[in-house]
Image (tube, rainbow, N blue to C red):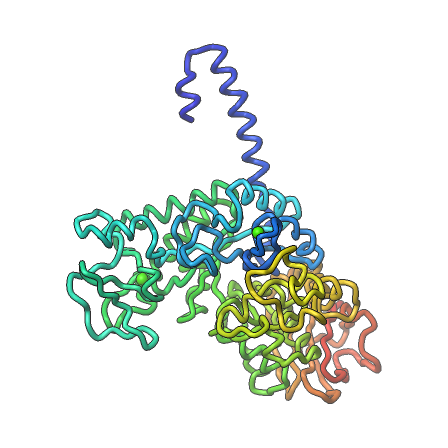
Length: 520
Ligand SMILES: [Ca+2]
Ligand SMILES: [Ca+2]
């Protein structure tokens, strides 16, 4: 715009400006051409860039490495990618301690690498969302550093400073107030990550501008971190305050003022509420994940809960079996102690249900936790590309973190070469989702849980699918409810169907998954 104004009335220059603007516009259009509308129904892959693929031999994963891996993700049937924080961080690890909200973590590459990733993902019909941390910055963010040393600084009002030290606070067993020589500041997630003062309109504006910065560059949406913690009222009322819900909606509305954008919130307090369109429009289904692995082990009560879940929950929830946080459980491999039959049952459970499924990187190849590590690093290890105990095929050098405990047996190379592998199973489940609209975004009806058998039906337009999963170690006689006697059940997965099936009456083989097209 400024270029155009300056050139006004200058004949040849104006023509050149228009030409340049035209080129720029075309370029921008191509870059912003996002994925198809249905991408928001998944499946997504949650990716920790630091641990995914190293392209330059420094032992740390980076954006170029991920860009080079897009065909690998596409082959699985992935529609979206969630990038854990890729902005400049002080932690140089998970990335949630942000130092610069508008630049790429130097370990990961440059803004040009980001642009290339978005472009290449879009070419493959894959959308990309990134983590955005509203609640706090890094202690080393320049604004906080200024507020810390100078109580007169305007940035003092950008954070939660008190002259004295508030008393009586307890957030998850910890006092969130940190004392300094110039008063104390609030840090819900620990001293290195001071909370912003989200009542300050300047802070809200700052976040709006940062979000727009990435949206204008072509990002397809955001995973908003810790949204129930945006605003604290007092020592007792700090979690999920009405002000935090309103503010979450404010940012969500801004993001969705751009076409075809997706937002998913981390709201452990009330996922079903945050999934509503008037708050976030998407939220992780915390609480469902441990029922999924229990169901996979055949626990009848968990199977009941899984069957009921989406009868009472918005379909805008996002389901998962595990993620990057230990509080959501270990890697699925470690949850089921390497039992691949149970592993597949767990995967089928959440990949075919309503809600947008999020696969945690490495889950699709049966990756175990990192060798010899504990806590969060245990579940955030380098991706197992090849059976190499040292590098895992993740890097040509020494990886920054130990490889997975089962890298020699479970790696992308081997998993993709076998028809019976976990990877092939995930691919088949995603193919069902990607080819049957009823499974991607249809209704959820006739939910049944009988003993260790779960069944439900999903409809979209004329398409009608029935999913039956037997978690038990014995075959089970089963009758699908609400199927017209004139209807036929055409096997979709596996294509052979069930022996001796009579309409809706069937005997489910032990520990099996079946999907049928219900046809008139
Ligand atoms: Ca690297
Ligand atoms: Ca806060």
